[in-house]
Image (cartoon, rainbow, N blue to C red):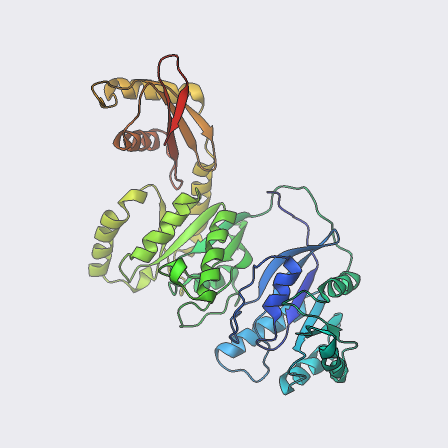
Length: 447
């Protein structure tokens, strides 16, 4: 996958809660990326997605509902929407044509009329010709001609996108360039402090932070400078107990958390140091390993622990995280910032291991001596012989063992442990598969 390094023009989708902003974003993207649920306030952050229309790329920013009278969490959402308006090149203001212009819509329109950015007024939920008269009533907002659209059914969306492209400033077209900041997925179960950590790293109120578990329901990309280097952090929705039994909003948020891990190169799994390592924590770690991503485990709220809890936590780590002894570990406090700067070194180390390639000659010299000292156990009366080993891939390191017989899982774990002792691989999973070659016959891949 190639990375676009040049800046893309930004289109902010704004409006009061539940007028269909996320549905419109999904229509623009041509896929279900934004969380959609018939509950006001589902989107609580500003979420950036890359979009493509008629060969031109731009960034579509989905925002939380705009409400000038909001308080509490609602006020945080309003600030996010206002920030998106200030940083956008084009503003798409969405109004529910079936409801008509509300007081909130009128208040928003007054602010938007003063904006120096182009504003496109969308009358959403115009599903047929009969409801187009509802759209015409929105001329009263003073933002020009309302564009009748049905985000749900796609009616009028092409015409709207043409208008958006006409209003966009000149921007770079698709480039085939590699590079850009390394991609970091910030994952963990709900309410362990992911948004607080991201805000600490970004040094601004980038994600909505609230004491309610699961406040973040969409991934939010942030470019942050850490250890003198830029990183692209994705703050993801907290993973729930079981994806297949979660409600609609949580289901799609959980799916995108998995997608964020897949899109990243390294994952920071955030655990709450003041709570026991849970089954949910284990599940998140498993997802990272199965995705083959580099892994850093960060223990948040470390500054709140007394001596007894620290000793207890060490025992829990020894017992519950024994399978990931190779993972990079760091103790931090998102609230005070303690230890957060150490993250950069752990990320670099994990990524370096993730991309390590061992020369075949060096690999086989080491493994031959190892096998001579500790040969694989006999199976069915015959001991398999290891012919040679090769590293098939990196990111993560993948090894293939060519053998005359099947190698037990215990011996493969032994090989993995010894490869780690000799070559490091600190902070990355490694995969070992076996290809059985029986005499002159064919070969069968074994995992």
